[in-house]
Length: 583
Image (cartoon, rainbow, N blue to C red; front, top):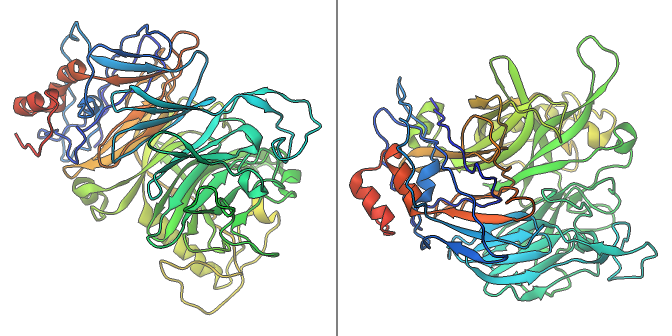
């Protein structure tokens, strides 16, 4: 049973990143009580006034912060669950560290180097490298510049006859390439070209822009591109790119695999892994699809790799006939897309609809997702192994709205193996000649499956027949809890001491809980696997200040007892030390 506890993140309306970490070690010092507790308290964070582009420190903390403890959600076992008691009065002196960007600047993406704790922030017109206590180490300017979204190729390649205007560069993708110690930062300028920056000092190692493969997407908004790096020990890595195309399918594939060359200036950087006259490592949206759904696009919410596959979670519009009606209406369907890592022709492309239901209410609009392990406690409940992959997902109610999702939302869990089993069943039935390919947006018309005698196992990667393939029956997640007023917008999860921990942000800026507040919307999250750090953007400090904020020692002292911390542990944590303490 999951229990949610309430608390505001920021009544003052800060634009911030709240960071709560497990002291830079592999263990988080939380001792669950019996019966197991699912604390999910949020911590009020005060507003602050800090000079432009500076760091404000009421008490600077090393990377060994304990503020993650303020927002834990612990999956409890047993027949009864204790609700957390009310917190004591907040301490008068609150410790926090805040970084603010330039006025009117938006933070778009954030990644944390799990080896060093350094934070990289992709913002409008700028990339920041911050220390773990939010001091600015380096900045790299990415814009603005003269551009026009109709210029293809961009004006830096050939003269453009369209009128040019000063255009911001919105960061659309930020990835750490650990193997080559570089940051991949892709923006909205020049049809979506990318920079490769040295992690140490953000020195530009390369910026390929002279080939069409270098233009990833012309969509001028954050959250429109998702990338997954597949790494190899003795070969160049691959970068799987999934992107909305904004009505330009002739220019941009919606999903593709690219080369990540060792040399950042190599001619083959971002080239398709395979490309000939007939086949390429990509899928484009056919132009015929736009005659059926003029505003068709695929919106990528999350991506990851697991085992032999790469996965993307998407939102897609489709036309359906309501029960008892002969007319069709447009709705949005959440789908999981799977590809084999080694499939250069994308014959392994399969997509399956996903959703959640509780109390007769359908939750079908995917808002956020995060891959984690089950852990021993939750694994026992779900009947899986502790090391099995789980998808923690947030859905909002219904299917009919994408940009204006309803406030009703649900946190649901999917067992990845069950999704893979469903895909295998579908592949087996199609190769028996049963049904059609069920991929309306790609094929427009129904194409029957073809029969072939072959064995399809868990790692089957497709042939040049019966592909790409869709699954018609929805895979339903396991509902954990629902929220009726303050839509959940982000989620992360990980395992500590056999317990599966989740962190949920809401549209009002709260961390894991119900209730409507004035706090800003969380628009991005990041969590280093080994450090258990929660970082979340929010929207405004007053009218136009972007802020990253880290909760500090005093607030952790305040909330620590509610999380079941033993006094010895709490003392050790607030002294900034980390060890394998058991109390």
